[in-house]
Image 1: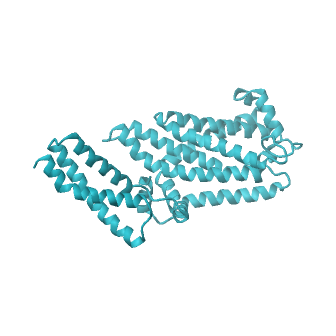
Image 2 (image 1 turned 180 degrees about the vertical axis):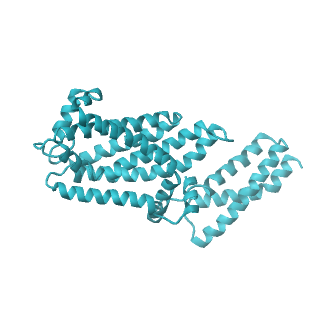
Image 3 (image 1 turned 90 degrees about the vertical axis):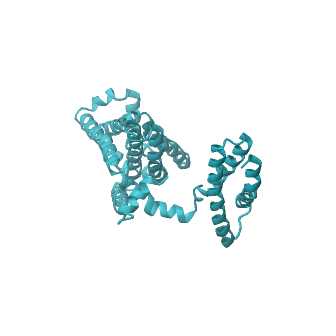
Length: 335
């Protein structure tokens, strides 16, 4: 069959596929029509792929193979594009997809937890035993800043602010929290080494500040400030680190795939966790700006609400969406 005969034979199908794509990319058709057009489009897409392989095998002219290739790529993008986010899909993600994905990555989550918590505890103990030890971690100016933040005379707990800047602090905390989470995740591209560094580093800083403030007699102010939002913020940082460790593992041990293929495959699972991490960090920023810093709230109330938040976060990640052994595996591969 000559190229002209091949084109004349199959062009009606190509034109039909182009028309269906133009219709789908334009005004939304009715539901029944959309279902019928979708089935027909999928059939024509498969035929276009077969025709493209045949044209390439027969070494047909470049303009002909490129025409079929562009059409097949356009159809592929439309057929396999992810569905649009809506309230229903968002609800299913947080009720099922996110906690199931976390449990599917339990090994990475455990490793990230140890990398963060152990330095935190060790540094906290060291700075509690010897408050001057914190000067090995940060300079005297930074230490004085923490003293002022959690002193009894400060207007609000946490970072210095005026009475009317809660919304500005909300924006600041969003930027800061998401920046830390992104560091822990994206640094997994360096074979996971930098993810390990950021987890350990953040644990060291948190432990040093906490241990020093407890030794300085400001532990009640400090813990009443961090107890609530830390349930979301610290958990999110650990989960971001777990996702980064998965990327690093994919690069170090790609198996039978190339490193790039392994990275793409494992990133589809890791990104599910990152979607949830962003949501947790937004909640943490709101609590930190509007609740944690409030002086008028009694310490006991903050401790009670903080304990409840920790119980809800841990229970949510551990039990929400069960039973779901099969679903866990699907969530790990979701992207």
